[in-house]
Image (cartoon, rainbow, N blue to C red):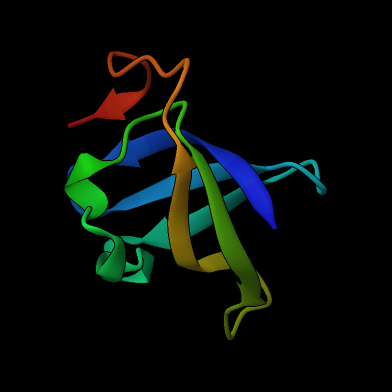
Length: 82
């Protein structure tokens, strides 16, 4: 599944707006695949990512295996939360 990062929190989590479902999907920093030369700290709102959609124990959607597809048209000032 693909989507666009809409919010990041410096405490190590963020939210993705999924392309196929009209909802925000939570992802923790550890869900970012690190084998591609970037980490959670390199991501910015607006980046397009690919991810696996899973559900936590409470039935809420969560992204795993988050992989950066491209970073064009991103605004690093948008929705970066302390």
